[in-house]
Amino acid sequence: MVCCAMNMTRKKLQDQGTGQVPALRFRPHHFLCSLGFEGKGYSDAFTANMTAIVMGQLRASGGADTVIEVVGQTDDICQPCPKRRGSKCTSQARIEALDRRHAKALNLQTGDRLTWGQASARIREHVKPDDLQTICAGCQWLDLGLCQAAVKRLHRQD
Ligand code: SF4
View (cartoon, rainbow, N blue to C red):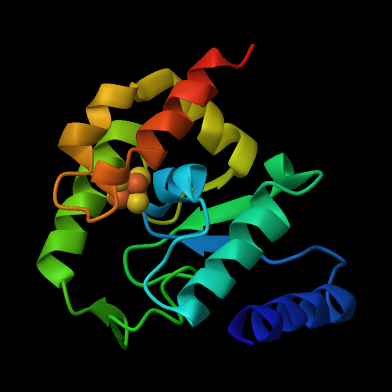
């Protein structure tokens, strides 16, 4: 339901505004999380929302042109997360450390705007699969290997 509400809001803005869909908002570590996302999440609502963003926008036809703005707090992926507390997280220190390492690896700063295609190219240029052991340290999804596999696939693309 959350994903549908969010998509309806975007559509409404698109219809009422300039005809452009507003930028997605991502905190730094969610660029790589989106690359590796395979339908697992913290709750049904979280997974539905992230599926709508990743499968419904970034990986959909034309998704490489999706504009994403870098933010320094909870973002569009965090919205329905059961761990979100306002603009913060119940694991705030661990998440901030993740964001710092991912921002450094991808040269991202709050307020930057880039397309998903540009973000993917930046991941490919700056991140090797084994780097995730360091920059994603402390993430519960790391040991599943899905994100490393996604980075490997990205490097294999021509
Ligand atoms: S291991 Fe965790 S922090 Fe790293 S990309 Fe995957 S989900 Fe994101």
